[in-house]
Length: 76
Image (cartoon, rainbow, N blue to C red; front, side):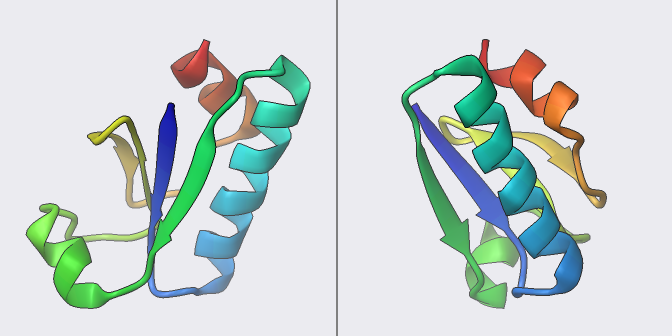
């Protein structure tokens, strides 16, 4: 599984990445977290407001920081 965090590296983007790491630790799911900070790549992905999270290439949440519990539901 691949979890992609889209965002330019702002505080909210860091928080989203941290929440994803916590969700993985709490569920024991084996996944790689990839950060995309290039604004051109973010725009190509169709994301107009960051942060955003994708699971295996499918955008799940954008424009806000997903909670640990939300992410746990997405990955399990």
